[in-house]
Length: 230
Ligand code: CDP
Image (cartoon, rainbow, N blue to C red; front, top):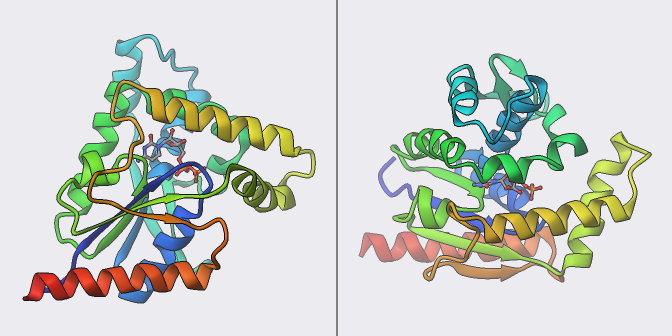
């Protein structure tokens, strides 16, 4: 639709990017793409097939066998990621994947595979995508960029509460360690490290509600569209 924009949301692990991105997309009738789910699904394939991350030939062979798609599930009212036609939306949230995903996402070949597909998804605009490099690498031309952050202790608690119902063996320490490790690897890797784009608006949602953050973001969308239509 004319007037549709690209909204890029980046930030640290578990700071509510997906929640905001999904709610924004629903309000605007835009597509929502969880780019992290793509890296998680690739990681699941690598784990299942014992792909050696140090071996570029094995990596390329594995990537050639991976087909990723997002399919809307009306029962859950959201798009879910499919790896070679298998719905892996729940499997990719498990700790075994979370422990490995940042290493896999740091691989150059993996990034060009995922980024190439992500860029195509934005061709028609009307999209909200969240991740680590959306405003810097995938859509540097995005009309609205948001960089999210939150107090680390709050992020740990939120992620723990999200995962605990499905895994009663989980400890707060395990979650804390995973988030610290991923933030470190994501921020320090050579290939498109996590960083705030100079033109991104910073939202710290440590002490604001889901509704408040949604309204802040919707106001930003309105502002950007108004400027574009001038
Ligand atoms: O746990 P959280 O929802 O915060 O992370 P995610 O969005 O599911 O992303 C999982 C991991 O994928 C991140 O820790 C990054 O290592 C990687 N990722 C990335 O490198 N680039 C993206 N655009 C999105 C995710």
